[in-house]
Image 1 (cartoon, rainbow over the protein chains, first blue to last red):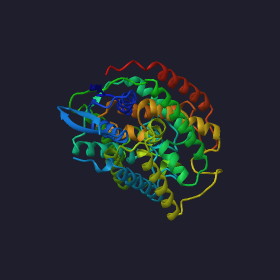
Image 2 (cartoon, helix red, strand yellow; image 1 turned 180 degrees about the horizontal axis):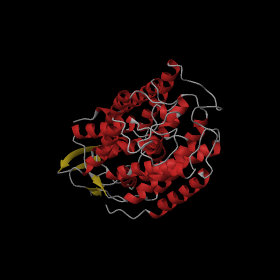
Image 3 (cartoon, each protein chain N blue to C red; image 1 turned 90 degrees about the vertical axis):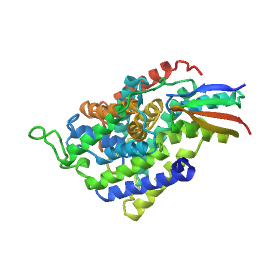
Image 4 (cartoon, rainbow over the protein chains, first blue to last red; image 1 turned 45 degrees about the vertical axis):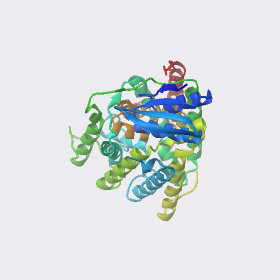
Length: 70
Length: 359
């Protein structure tokens, strides 16, 4: 099941903390919503280190990051 | 579009450029080991506009103006300028106030702590250890769910306010405006406030740092925080490059003078060097960025970061007016007490601001 994380408007490093927590709970399929490039870059750096593949797409003013097991 | 500056190589190049620029700014007139110091430079601005009357530290530092405007321009060009705000502004203001009070007990922000070390000032070691300790405490709060809540998009052009304030300051500097005989605007005739690189060079350096830091997300506090929190060495590789290149620059320019006694704009009280910077480090973690990063964010339209920066400028006024700032002779009469109060404030914020985020 895909776990949704809404990290919009959260200042650094909250988005990364939320994703870390979700990964530590054993989730690999995540749909992360962020609203700025910095959060996107930080989350992508984390998911790469966790060995997850990720793809991003824009959704209006926001960015959606979907992750999955490699 | 891929952001090349967000890569490991990118952040190292940015750190190196900042290190070289800092050494050069010192060579061209800035005070020793103060090529770039966000806290000291904001303190000088506070003095110039009369928020304190210590006549040796009053100057409108163009580097600070350049930081904000450079980030503003870079963010606009990259389509990243987004007005946003509303995440506990008053708490952020006081985090800024106490971050400045702590920094002026040490006599420098994290940027200057690194530059002091690069210039051979051994007292910086206590400050950097304190910084790491404060960040460590802050990370414990982060791990337990600390956050100041979400920021929300604000109306167009509200994000232009802080850059506009900076532009106004620059005009006051260029035209040397005097509002009454004897000032304001105040400009130091002696002491560190009177030492500065030529205006346009300072501004150009500030703009370049602002642009590079906005693209690379350079942050001195985040560097240490990410190592402690998630074992991520990305940002700290940039800070290490800053240290290395500032050190090399100082060696080449004959500015490296190792020792503890008689270091420029520094004191040897290692306990309060440690604790002052620890308070700053904690406040920076709770606010989500080092003082430089807060300026870059405010250039991008982050009004909460702008409030933090304003808190630092007001904090500089408070610090000097209420005898909390240190000098080369040692701590100010009320510096230690202010640091204790600052810790109390930060701990209360850390323990209480942790409402659950829905996700």
